[in-house]
Length: 314
Length: 314
Image (cartoon, rainbow over the protein chains, first blue to last red):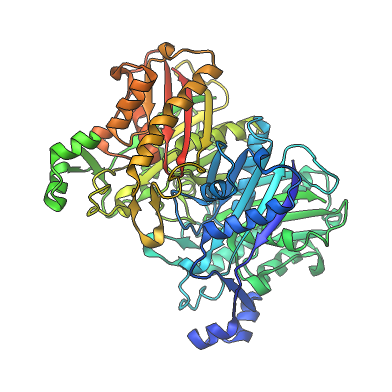
């Protein structure tokens, strides 16, 4: 399958570390040293998960190389829902006005981008769809407790839309060569490491160390799996986009995989952790950087200890 | 694909209409006349969407005709999440202790049972799974506002687990002959008819009439589609299980499809609207009633105006 178009949306408001210094006494240096984050975006009071998803989707439609009415499947993803009934996918269907197609929203926490793409791959395999829209959106600041000195400074908002076709439509399409997803919900602090219980409001990370260790284990592991399955060596890969959770995790993954840090793509420095949208936003941001024939691995790990890796060829 | 085992879980506490008469002045007669509901179940303070999903899954494991470690995919569904990060699917993976398999939770509102099964169908088509666990769970009472005289009396809690294999494993398996899902998010009050915005807490239905009309339109329409696609007539169908939203909708669907009411299976009278779990609970409740060779249609419609139909052969 092939990515035809990628687009992203970021809210305007920038929150720098100075905000958290004033609020919680966490200094810019302290935050940067532990997370790599210098600033993040925050949705306005008129925005939410659904509006950001719609904005990214509409932006994507502008450069879509086919009529929007050919879209025959929408898969939305978020763990920070605005509405769990009229979900991200429903709101996007409504906004782009493509009637009578399957729509479903998913959450497998920060790994959802790859779960959504794998679900699309399944619809393609069944011949139930040919042109899918995957839209990932996070409104972390809606659920975040800024006063939480453990994790309140980590989160940012943003969305991205990927238009994916079963067949190649143009030379500029990127090929999705392979996707692997998995769940490690049976190990460590998978059930408590990162949680968001809507009725208790808080997006919390009480066991950050356990999350850190497992992210640093699973992202290299599943990246190697996807390389082996495709008879590739890590040296064949031009860029790796890991889940944007913490710059120290990214550096650790680079070390384990023995990849020079310049091959690691990051946006956490200026966006914070944008959940399942982070890697997709990075794809959009770097689309002119990638050269024809280059291979890119996206690898993710999230709360509940879901993980995955995807191999792209530009 | 084939359903090997079905199981369900209902919380113990029964809430009769007398409770709402005392609370809101809605009489038993008034509620029954408009909805068919006489009572519903309510989860205890120790229970939630995840615990109910786990209970249904563990019950299913007791009669599973293969080792639980052969399960290679878990798809959870709910629109009333306990935790949107450590989701239903993650909690079930953790509880049944099957490591390193894909897990994902979805929401397409009340239609999610069929969306989840269609996602499984996709994994089977890709040969990425052979034995899937679909678990549907709703904790409506956690988000419901009981004081809401429009919809507060409608909702109940419950969960069900379906174990589904790609190949037939025994003579007692039911065959899933076909599944169709769709979304009508572009029409009517799809975005506002039924909503659950977690940060505003309320599960509300401000446009019940629009939901009613579209449920009565789409469930017969998609049921006919699944019959036509399989060269069947409505007279070939022994039972229809519609989404358990309102007994008047069920009767209306029966009328449109020209099906005698005794062919319509309902549990709303004693469970209320249990969301995406309702039809799956009904499958479990009626499993000894179905005779070998009988055909059953499940049809669903939900908020965001997702819909679907599934054809089963017992």
